Length: 255
Ligand code: PEP
Image 1 (cartoon, rainbow, N blue to C red):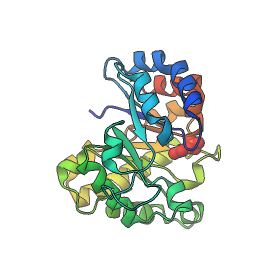
Image 2: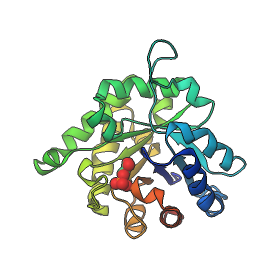
Image 3: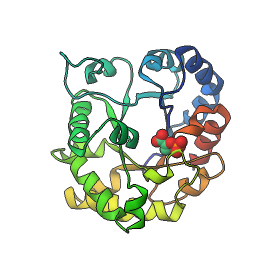
């Protein structure tokens, strides 16, 4: 049985003071929902607010993640954050978000390097994959997403693969208010993503890896996604910035 995992990606929103306010507003409700281990809840603020959010949720089951990392351990890489630095302050890290691929030139190869670096530093990765609108309309979703999964997981052992969370995020659904359908996302995750994992490893590993859906998930539509057999949670952007909405989404994940 895969434990559903809900992660809030705050993107480049919230100063440290604002992060404190948002975390405090939802901490007790989230802690109650995650208390018996039925769901996992992760907050992913911008780098600067990660330690503060970590302090605020200390002693609760709420976990903290970063939104990116660099693969080198240290050195002349101005502006970057190394995996070991993150491991001091959080447990999870988002890798290969489509905004990083789109605006910062992250390639499948970069994603693969980041994944290896995260795992080598005991960080739990959430790896994002997803097709753009043109690819979707051209019927290329399976091809594109399958290739992204294969490239991301290159060189990972079976045991390492099982510790990775995948977020299926169709790019056309991110921040647009135009979510995929529950059944559509379920099919891509079941056939394409678990299919690629079964090819790379075996069926047992394909069934063990947790796969989230992301793309305009909100308090109203969350239940539709979370009821799907292949969907193990959600990566939530905009709605994770509203305490009541994020709590409602997490509530919908409790089975
Ligand atoms: C995201 O940031 O990964 C995301 C899915 O954003 P939104 O929920 O706003 O579409």
